Structure formats: structure tokens, C-alpha cells
Image (cartoon, rainbow, N blue to C red; front, top):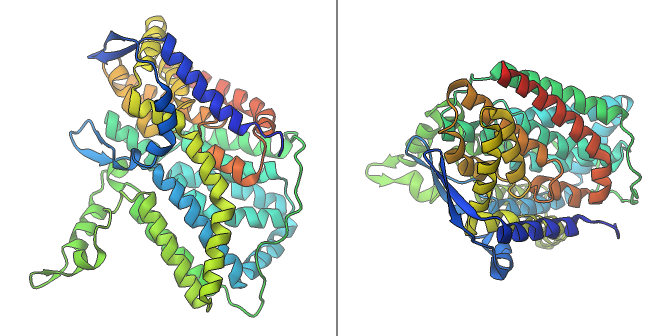
Length: 479
């Protein structure tokens, strides 16, 4: 861990962004025409304030969409709270004794098929991310699977690939994910059925390559630290209450966080929220007064998710007869274990916050340059631009917002749909290696995997996937 270069890579990314702002002029696209705006370099305080603006920016930002409505941005400041409250939840679980029993029982049952369990875990997170697309919810499940996989004596790299990497890949080849497909439909009015067969084929291709690479690729040598079991095992405690409460809470979070309207154009969940909040006795609004300012179903951010995680932690502590000292110690343990992960995610956000608060004009100049050379080919243009932006901006919502005025006047119909898919692929690929990728940084920090070791393992996979995916899209683009 002494040679971990992740922090250095994060700051090199920021330095590259700052230097680029001083040598590349800014510009804007207006109805497809590029107009240069001169230089707008990022300054010292743009950098110094970025980690703090992270907590005051995204969760209150609204973005005007193509249908004239506004939607609350995902809110990655809430991601920090989810990280920390996830730590508290698992610290509580570890103290119950029942959770340890659950882990031991599962590990014992799957031990004879441990390789199958590893591959099954990989496919589970790939499919969950592809269909649901909520990385915050995936993050809630990952520590549970990691504990089982560690018990089965898998390496750090294998565990990371089957959990964190699989989640990123699922988002890249999303079929109905709210963070990608929902955003694409909202910004570009692309229907869910467009390129659906192609998306399914790409998902199958990615899944196949991932499983083969996970099975046969040589892993770099990483110091496998001796980690004592963090959980207590008490065979007299039943884990049924714990499992029941956890599943119930997860289902509620899934329903409340998944944007049913922007993916399926379904207003039933939204109407259910409105009907719930309108519940009254006579003229007295009972539900709205009891629930308070609850976010609408389909738009829950990390803040609401964190609140539910704390509630779940308290319920589990109550069911398993925790003392106040037990609960306080659990909070301390959870925060201390996950604090470093949260700090690294904040640092990884610096480049994204700088661009979002101080302007993205220099990327419009880059887009104009690339566009002038490959205007007819939607796939390489949007894919390359999304990859460039994705190296500094983790949020696909922000990238689609920036690219909207660039590509909408250029492409239409099937070409626009294909260009948006290429944009999704370009962004998804870069999140596998970029030091500004929140989920990647969170995973590497949590698993204590050196960044340079990760790059030495993943670069072949990255190239194979990039070549195959964009070769397929290019052929379709040229037909």
C-alpha cells in the first residue's frame, strides 16, 4: 500500500485539466454552429474550493430537459453519506452475531462450487446494474458479497472484478438503467426499444469477455493482508429478522430511487406518491405532516437512502438488543472503516466540480475540432468526446447535458440513437480506469488495491472491449 498511486493520479488529472484551460480557448454551440469565446482558465480557488463545493452543488442542481420539465440531479454529495451510513449498517450487522452466522452458512453451502459463486456474483451485479443502474444501491450489497468471497479465499482482484467492475460494466451496457437509459431518454427523446437488440448483444458480449478474463487473466501480485473476521458468530441467534428487515428496506429503496417515468414513461409510481401525500382525515393532511418533506418516488437521492440506512441500523440494533454503548461503538467502527473511502471519492470529484461550476467551454472547442474531421461518423465522434469528458466527469447526467447542444443539431433518427449509445459506451469504458471515476475509486480504496496494480491487470481487458464494442458500432454506423 505504500506505493499506491491513486492519490497522485487524481491530482495529475486535475493538473491536466487546469493546464488545458490555459491553452485551449472556450466556446459554445448554438444550433449546431460553434462560436469561440476566448480563454477562461481555471484558477487557484477553483481548485481549492472544489472539494467543498461538492457538497453544495449537484444535489440542488436542476437541469432543463428536452420536454421542458426539470428533474433533480442525481446528487453525488449524497454518495458520501451513503458510503458512511453503509459503514455504520455493516458495523451494526457485524455485532449481531446473526450476520456472522449467515455468512458462515452461505460460505459453507457454496464452498464446493466457489468458482461458480464468483462468476454468479459477477453476472448478478452486471445484470443488476444493466437493468436498474443505481450504483448507490449496488454499493449497499457489495460488502455482503465481499465478505462471503473473502471467506471462500478469493483474491482481492477477483473480488473487485466480480463486484465493483461488474457494476461499472453493467452501467456501460445498460438496458433499462435509470442513470443511463433514463437520462438518455429524457435528454434525447430516445425510446426504450431503439437499438434494444444491439444493446442485448453488447451486454452478452461484455458478460462473456468479463467471465473469460476473470477466469483466465493473470492477476498482479498484491499483498493479501491477514484480515480477521470482522463479524461475530453466534449460532444461537436467528438471522431471519435481519434478512427480512434488510430485504424489505432494499425493496423500498429500489422503488423510491428508480425513475420509472424517464425509463418506462410510467406515472403509476409518481401518482402513488401523490396519492399517499394527499391522504387526509377530513381536511387534515395526515401523510404529508407525518412524512414531512420526503422526496418523490423515483427521485430519491443519496440523502433519503442514507436516512433509510440509519433507520435500518437502528431497527436491527433494537431487534438484537443492542445497548447504547454497542450502537455508539458500531457508529465509530463504521465511520472509521469507510471514512477513507469517502475522502477519496470527494478528492476524485475535484475535476468534475471545477468543470460544472466554472464552465466546460474548452471541451466545446475540442468537440468542434473533432467534429470538423469526422462529422459524418456519429459513433467515433460522440464516443471519443464522451470518453474525453468521462476522464474528468464521472456523472453521465452531466455529460449528456454538455453534449446535448453539440449532437442534437447534427444527428437525427437512428443516427442520433446510435450516437447516444456510443456516448454511453465511451463514458462507461473510461470509468473502468479514470481516477475521477467515483465508483472505481471507492472500490479500489475499500479493497485496498493499488491503482497501478489495477491498471496493470485491466489494460488488456480495456483494449479488447473498446476495440470490439466500437468496431461493432462503427460497422452499423457505416451501413
